[in-house]
Length: 543
Image (tube, rainbow, N blue to C red):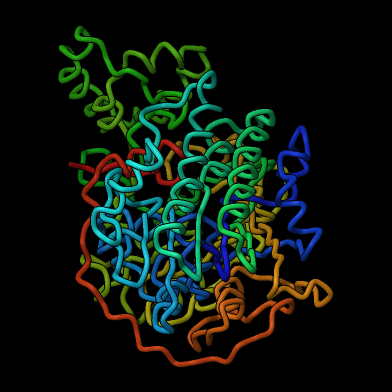
C-alpha cells in the first residue's frame, strides 16, 4: 500500500499557536516534514471559518464559486446549517476520479451527503452524527475496525476528561484513514483533524491541553506516514486562531443607531440568541421541576416586561453586576430567556448582520428578499452609506474596528456570489470580535476570548516537492491546484489559485460543471446545537 499524495488538514493550525506549545516535540513529525521540504504561512480566505474555508481549500475556489459562506445558508429570512448540497464546485477527489484515480477522504467538512466517486468518504463537520457515507455502509465497517467513531462530543466536555476525549477523536480519524487506505489502495488520501480548533474554543489559553491535542495529531500523522508511505505529503490548515485582544463589536446595535436596524420583542422579530449571555447564562442541566412548573408564567411576565423595555440583555448586565450569573444560569429556563430577548426584526430592517462569521451586512432588498424594504434603485446608495458608516467606526480606545469595509464583489465572484453578504467587513487584525446580539451597548468584552485569524500554515515534503523552489506567498486557494500538480492531473480552470512554486505545475482543464442536486435540509438539530456551543453560530430555531 502506498499513497501518491496525502493531504493532512489540521484545523486552525498556525505558527503562533505552535510556538505556544509547552514542548515543541509535540509537533516533531510536522517539523521533520518541514525540515525535509517547505514550511510557510498560508493566507486564508474571507471568511476564515471552517465551513467556508475548507471548501475553498479542497476546491481551490472562492465562496462565490463554491457557494458556502459560513455555517448557515439563508433562504429569505429562514436558515439552515449548510451541507454538501450547497457545494457547487468540484473537490480535488472528484477531479482525481475523472482521471481514474482512487481517493479516500476522512472528516472533511461540508461533504454530507456525499457524491459517488472511486473510493470512500466519511464526512466531517455539519454532517449528522450518523451520516450517509460513500460507499453506503462504510461507516459501520470503520466502526467495526477502529472502534468508537463519533463526529461530535456527547454533551459538554469537562476539563478532567478533555484530553482523553480529544485524543479519542484524533485517533479515530487517523485509524479510519489507515483502514480505508488499506482497503481501497488509493492514489490520494485526505484526513482532517478538527480538535486543534475545538480545544481553542472550549479551553482557550490552556496551553497544556493544547499541547496534548497537537501531540495526538502529530502521533497520528506519524502512524499514517508509516502505514501509507505517501510519495508526497501536503499539510495545511484552513485558518489560524489566537487570543482576541480587542473589543466585541455588536454590529446590529451600531446599525440600529444608524437607522438601518429595526427590533422587536413580541416574537415577530427573530431573536439573535436565546440566552442572557451566551456563555455565562446558558443553564447547564436545565431548570428544576419546581422552576419548570412556573416557567410558563415567568415567560409571559418576561415577555410583557420586554415590551416595556426591560429585556434580557438589560437583565444580564444587572445580574452580572450583582455577581449572580452562576445562580441565575441554574434556574432561568431557556424559554424565559427567549421571551425577553430583544431581537432584530429582519423583515422590517433595511440592513442587518444575520450571521457574524459571514463577516458582513445584508441589505433587505425588495424583489430579492421576501419582504424587502430597500428599493432596488436605492441599493447602491444604501450600500455606500453602510460602507461609509462602518469604515468610520472606532473602538472606545480610538482604534478602527475594521481594516476593510468593501462591496461583496471585492471578495466574492462567481455564480454563487449573489448569495453573499452585500457589504464585507474585515476586522482589524481579526482582533475585534463581531457579534449580532443586541445588548444595548455597542462594545463589550469579547465573549469568545480566542478568535480565528487570517493566517494558517502549510508544510510539504516528498517526491513532488522541490524545497529549493520555496513556497512563494501561499494562499488557501493554492492548495487544491498544488494537490492536482502532485497527483499529476490538470487543475480546473475554474480554480482561483495556482500550484505553489515547489511543485511542477500541470495544465489547466475545463472540467464539466458539477451537476446541481436538489437541496436537502440538515435535519439533525444536534448539529446546530454543537456549532452553537462552540461559538460558530448564534442562532436557534424559532420553532
